[in-house]
Length: 87
Image 1 (cartoon, helix red, strand yellow):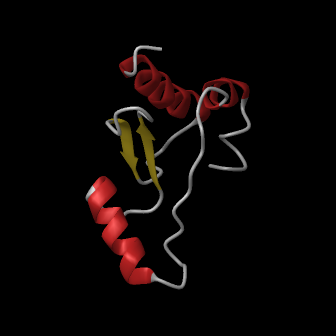
Image 2 (spheres, helix red, strand yellow; image 1 turned 180 degrees about the vertical axis):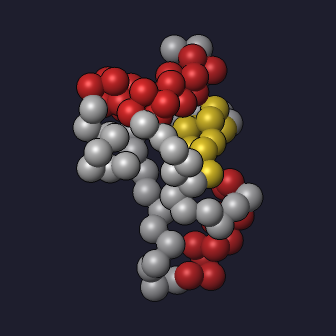
């Protein structure tokens, strides 16, 4: 995804208005990471893509796993989340 989908024009254009944050689940504190995964997305699936409204903390879009996302499908996921925020 990061190498083949994120750089495509449709996805890159959506990502320009977003701030990326990552939670790696292979760090030195796996218990804390698992707690955060459950708290944030109620899942241990990887990858998980979450779009969060920075003002309210509301989840605007969640995708568990990389399920057959092509560039346009992922751009649509991001677009829908952005539109849910009223942008």
